[in-house]
Length: 253
Image 1 (spheres, one colour):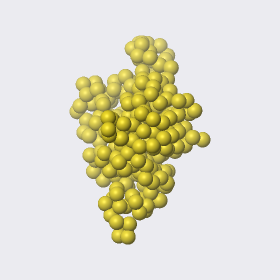
Image 2 (cartoon, rainbow, N blue to C red):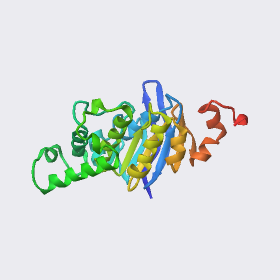
Image 3 (tube, one colour):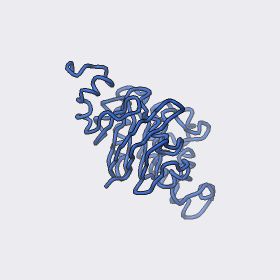
């Protein structure tokens, strides 16, 4: 069953066409990769889907609901969450409070719910946060300031904050950015074992090993247009992808 349906998505900034007639369908429960060179339109795609930019043309449907042009807070309330390539943590809050605060964007929950103190509901939510910290390997850091964490833990915290919103669709923008190969393997395991079960993911990443490891299918953007789609193996052996994305001629692959 298709969860996200994007048809003919175009986004223009003046004369620049950052996305050009992009159509992608992401199935429920799928981990879908979005790859391409710098400037190919990947983050713009995320920004349009999440309501930061309205589409110039095209339709975006989440679970059958047209969300194209909705502001970000309304898109979030319909079950979509994302991370950012440039981290959006609250640096002077500790790890627990960063995740606690993120819950106010869950469907059916408000900031007043987060600020309410006492009672069974608060204890239940605190237990959920503690469970998420444990799953994400952050339990021992719950009282540490976000600004004091090393980059790999900050990226895991960013993913945990997005997961705290209990989204149907989770968009991850370069979750392994700046990490070593071993750190990348660790975040891939977290995505595969903690983030992916029970939800749908779209992952932007330059590291092809991670895309091959966690994704069921992937699409490639180049100058704002989709040039390939299929399994990671199919995409990474596509002659056009080898030529324009990997910088190799197809006959050298």
